[in-house]
Figure 1 (cartoon, one colour):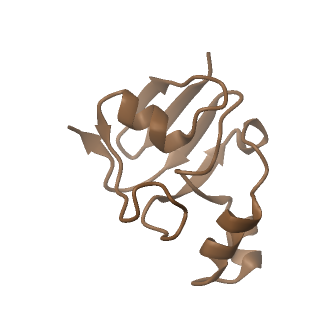
Figure 2: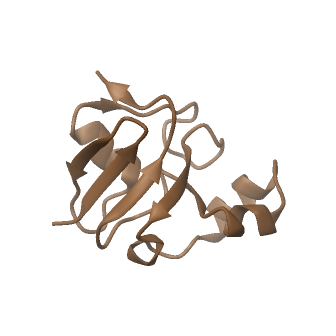
Length: 103
């Protein structure tokens, strides 16, 4: 079962393979900031992948389009940015997202 470590909260949660980062957090009783409710039309859930980027699915067109509306694609890729509502896990990852908290 994949593990997701969430910084700066410093909490580790379990995820099902194929589950999004945000869905795993919500299932673990965490609040994850979102405006669009996981539809990939905002960047409120945007997080930085600190480790384990290879354990996420590839960035899809919709996700990339949404992220690059506000920042250059090079910045998205160089900083390992992902939308937590779209990034599906297949192994352990460490993410950094301010505002995630216990509900």
